[in-house]
Amino acid sequence: MGSLGLINIENTALILKEYFPEDSIEKLKIPLTISAVNFSESRLVYFTKGPLIRAIHASSCIPGIFKPIMIDGQMYVDGGILNNFPIEPLMDDCDFIIGSSCNHLKPVDKITGITNLMGRAGIISINHDMERKAKFCNVLIEPKGLGAISTFDMKHAEDIYWLAHEEALITIKNSPTISELITK
Image 1 (tube, one colour):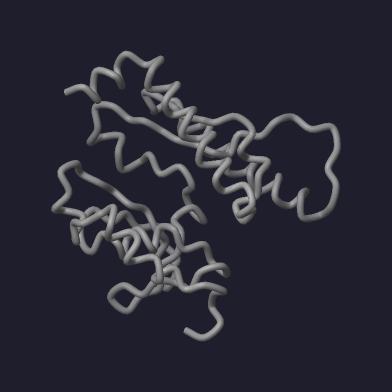
Image 2 (cartoon, one colour):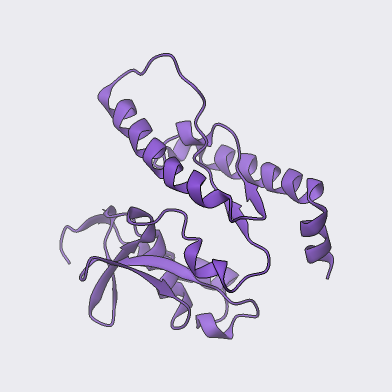
């Protein structure tokens, strides 16, 4: 695929196999739906069966950063380019939906630089769609302020992880329903 991406995300397959030993989505104990964009056909797709790691790669494949993932002769990329909060396939099939968003933006009184301007505009657009859909979630985990940190800011990757982790623990602790579901 030449220069269709800076990095080949498929190099993470061995790491993912340590955490996801099942080789297909349908063999998982809990039903899973993974969204991606069929870039070849310009359409959103939801994987509910097939190779798990390939679907994870496709769903994580940010265009331009990662080379598109080939599945059955079609190119796939991150589902977020068409739907960054894909709640639709869950609405009729789930009794309890937990949403997660790491794009919370703090108010600002100035913007410095075109890159920050464009980044904030993109997050605002994503958040508008998410806010409309969040009402269908029973619980929403949303660590505050993470939307101001660039997706590509690797210096803050561990900080982002721990902030999101702590917010998830707080949400679980404060939600009797989640605590009840976990203990079953």
